[in-house]
Length: 390
Image (tube, rainbow, N blue to C red; front, side, top):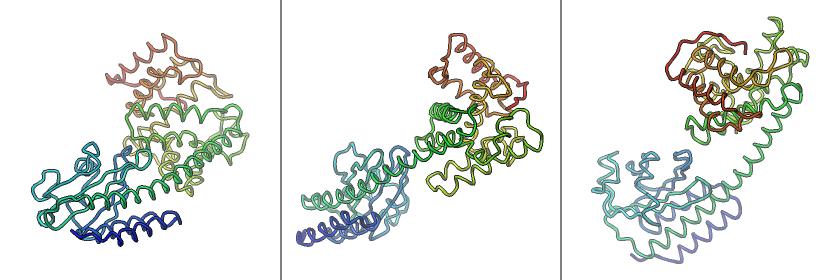
């Protein structure tokens, strides 16, 4: 095939200029796939951005024939077709007979011959996958490799630049979350450090449950901010938690709704808003503000409910004494199935067993034995008795 390198260098220069001038990343990728298709005389070209940590396809940009067998694949199928361990290029001589190509659309599968794919790293868990497909059989020439590599890497550079900026922005936003958490606790000396400790317990519990990294981070942020709705409440009410009138308790019970309203304009905390709103729901449906029950309560909120109660019992408050760890463990086990999700309670107990440093005073041998005993009771589904004060 006669490839005009003058056209290639013109495209390469245009893409480089767009990257360094800070143009929109999606537009850069659109320019790349369009020109790869044109330069190679291909039927179509697709550029994916994937997040291997969250195991999902984040973006797909394509040009040319909408080849459903590739365009409609999910993350797992895409990773199988373009496995980076197979080398810098994946070459499929005949898509019609190759088992890696799924039977999404019979007509589409029959209308494509060869496919050339290039997976490449970008930053962190993010990677790119570039695929070019042709009408008929096409051997992969050295010039094909050069053009796909050069323009594919230009796309990687653009994405690296954009994602590096996003990561820096996220770091700044994480600091905003921490500042907000400190502002909450500055209102009440007796709760100093409460949100940080709840966030730590919640993060370890979420990790023990095997949740994805992004969900663990959202739950950690939820722990830091779960009480942000108290920031506008009267200090006198906060100081008398535990001995409030019914009217005053009605005021306090608004703090999850107020907190969700405060955080909702921060788009990067979208996943955290429902956790803040529902962290006082109860597993049996008797909580507030919406009376959600069981699995209808977001899992992150169920985790925060358990960890919030546990930390409060350990630390105590002005009007009720702190508990020993063993007593707090008993209370959680007895509340499982009523106030708490039993699976979350069991996960917290397991996390404490594996990470005794989570508790400020440490966990002694008798405490570990207690945790193990009540994990077994939860696993056996023993009947519950007590209703907690939290």
